[in-house]
Length: 118
Image 1 (spheres, helix red, strand yellow):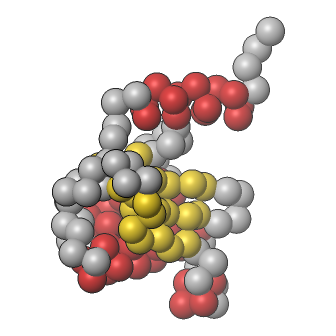
Image 2: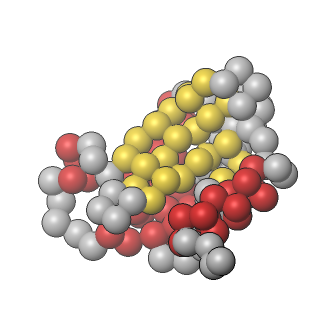
């Protein structure tokens, strides 16, 4: 029986999460992509705490009429600013099983431009 799209992504996500682990010195930047929005968290896996989070649903981003790729770019810049304010410079990028193109790629590049080291 063939896997559904969600089951396939879940397997990929588990395979990635076996190798990627966020510490307090280098937390994990985790991405979730829905059909309309994109959500990002910076997580310390040792303490099981979300340090910084943002999404495309915040007022500054959702009020702008832009494409989803440009929306992801704005979220990447926002998470980089918030992480800098929290004293976080380097992170481990967790793409959560999504392919590295489109919205995921634009978010990662914008976070790098904002000063985060992925």
